[in-house]
Amino acid sequence: MNLEDSWLYQYDLYIDESYIDDIPVEKLEDFAQVLLDLNQPTRVQTGFQRCQSMALSGFPMAEIQMAMCYLKGLGIGKNIGRVVYWSKRAAKHGDAQGAYLLATLYDQGLGIPRDEKQAAKWYAEAKKRGYRPMKELSERLPPDGTDEET
Image 1 (spheres, rainbow, N blue to C red):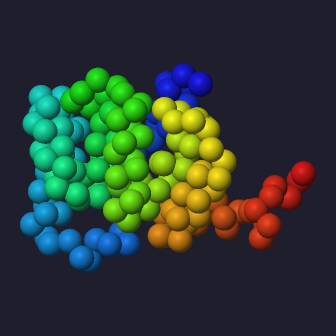
Image 2: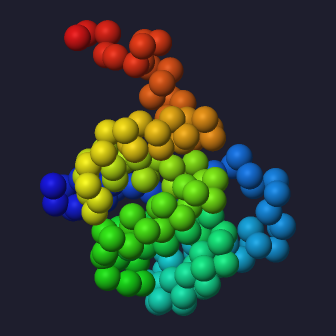
Image 3: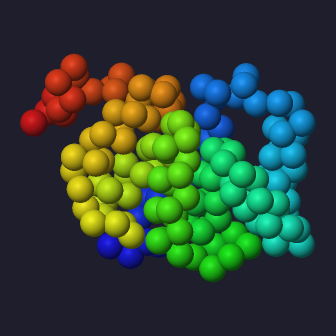
C-alpha cells in the first residue's frame, strides 16, 4: 500500500493525557511551542529540530510527533522506517498514541512486516492506556469485537 493512500497520512496529533499530570509545566509549554513552530511554514525546521531534541531525551509526546513529522514530511523528508522507529519508542515509553500508531503500522504492514499478533497487542495497549479513538471504536463494537452485521 502506498503511504499517501493510507488513512495514516491524514493522522493528526492527539495529546495523550494519561501522563500529562506528571510533566512539568515548562516542558509542556516548550512542547506547545514546538507544535506551533511545526505548523508555521517559516518555522517548521526550527520546530523539527526542537522536537527531535525533546524526543531524543525520551519525551514520549515528542517521540510520537517525530513519527508524525516523518509521516507527513514536516521539516524532513517522508520516511516510513523512521515513522516505525519513533512510534516504537513512544509506545515503549507509555504513549497511547504511539501504541495505536505502531499497531496500525503492524496491522497494515506499512514500513514493517504485517503482524496481526503485534497489531492486536499494541491496539490492546492503546485501549488500556485510554487512547480515545480506541475507546470510541470499542463502544461501537459488540463485546466479542466483531461487526454485528456479519
